[in-house]
Image (tube, rainbow, N blue to C red; front, side, top):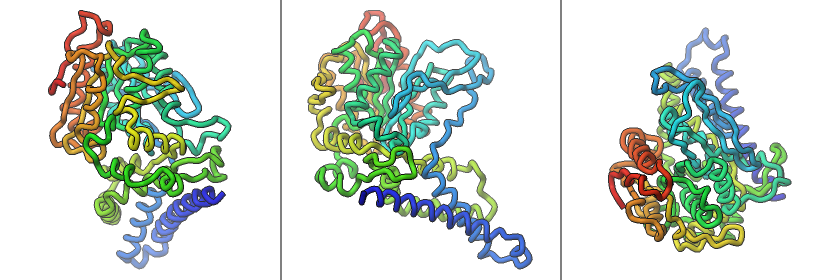
Length: 426
């Protein structure tokens, strides 16, 4: 019960700040004050507007906001999001482009479940639509899932991916971004052993912690410094009475957000100060650069406690994937059993979350895969976000990934399949 009260306290603080912002904005814009112009009121209204928007976004799931895409025929085609598989903890969704022929490239984009919604990959999705038949994992907010739905840890996550791959079939190309990279690798190996006919044709891992110890960062060092008991005591809370998941043990999104913000407190503080000034000067807009970024960045979701704790313990502390000792549903997964799925890794030279060396470690684990089916790319000057959503992704990495997909779009393991198209070959 103590943890439930703590959860509700955080929500109360968020709600109070949203109310203060709304009240300041409404008070400062009171018509009678217009008779006595005062710069202080202008700044008060600007502060209220930015504050209200900031704290209200923290409990809202963003919309994909992708309404149309320009097809190869030069015409705009409407985009519809449809659910292919519906599960308690996450769905498999399909971005159907109406009025266009199905694309020969079928891609499953595995979104991270690390405190943000799958919409964090909105720009990645937009850049791929029109060139691929796109499916995305859409993970649910744990606070909205009743306790009766049961647990959800990294083994359950892996089995979800296995089911999604089976549903899409062996002509699928999988792209995993950040957190799910090690579990997607494990899911592919699981299929290689249990259901070889359902294996995807290629697997692209982008900035994921396959071997966190290969190049330690502040994120991996944190996992090494604290014990699991300390982590559970400090980070895990029970969902309050306001949400359907009341009583569920979670790692709250608001707690995760506070950690993210504190890592770059000075930069975020300046960003909000500058935005208040822009609002006061009439230079801000509803969809300006600040709002586009923070509307997504501030929208956080809770993770189940068992998923968060098992990720820290088994992926980061014990290095089960890195040591090829990962067990799923009582079955020890052997990554060396991957023999027909081409694997490519992508890293950013300036990535301070999954530093260079952590992701490319996947290729060493694929001992059963021929060298000509392995590929790697290190993007100079790119940080973590840039390798899947920034300029580096659009200009350099995306074309390489599509080339890699095309090079492996034949029958897996067949002699007709081309060599992987690489910038840096592993």
